[in-house]
View 1: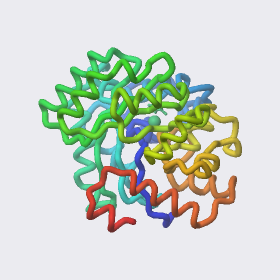
View 2 (view 1 turned 180 degrees about the horizontal axis):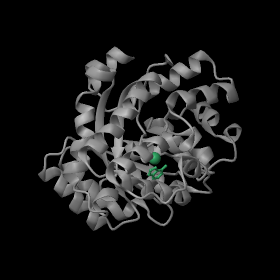
View 3 (view 1 turned 180 degrees about the vertical axis):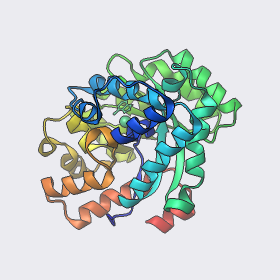
View 4 (view 1 turned 90 degrees about the vertical axis):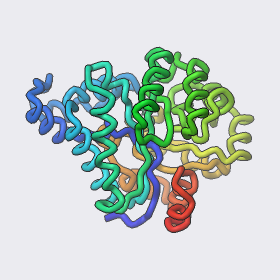
Length: 320
Ligand code: HPA
Ligand code: ZN
């Protein structure tokens, strides 16, 4: 049990699908996996960039077929996150990744939502669900899915933008984000993970996002860093993810200490913990070992996460 209470703000629920659960769900659903066995699958968790991860991530989703599958995956994450000290989680899901393989919107949304509904009582974790759109698919499709989510009154608090970043700038998604704004939804987007600082600026100026997922490449642009500091835009940084997807060579080379030093509003998250070698506690522990962060610095990172959440005021104050 890790006892630094924090909020997890950058988490893809499909990225919590552990290898063992992939095999269990495949057996339950009669899915023929293209792996010789568990170890063969685990041996493939060696990535060269974002796309090499995304290929495996989307492929493994084929085991998710029923509401119960989505609920079981979500419950497994919440149980593990509670042990990691997470007290509030804003969880992204990728509806298009399921729709394209013939799984209904209701199946994935209701499955995840049913586990989230019990989360506070069962695991002590308050939650919010965020629908993330795939930036390497047409924006018109994202808009259609958003309309469908609104029509079914899906219990989402906001929207996000993920998948292959380079060549898919935020500017293509202005209509989707405008519709979300009208609907009263919170807005976040991945930017500056593999993409240039300009994508961070576009996400802020053209999409009106309130948080940036990753954002580490902002450091290449001094004017942008100054703006992010002045506006205290939250950056949901994922150190182990950045190492595994080779955005940085090793954890020692990670810019998190420099980001803190510059006064950026950063917090620590796990992104796709089943794929990247750890949950929030693992990220914190490895940061502590690598950089010798003090208890105060760790507490600042944890407090940043709670302050940057979309949690309601009363619970935020209780967690801080
Ligand atoms: N980056 C972009 N898209 C994603 C990721 C990520 O780390 N994980 C799941 N979708
Ligand atoms: Zn992410």
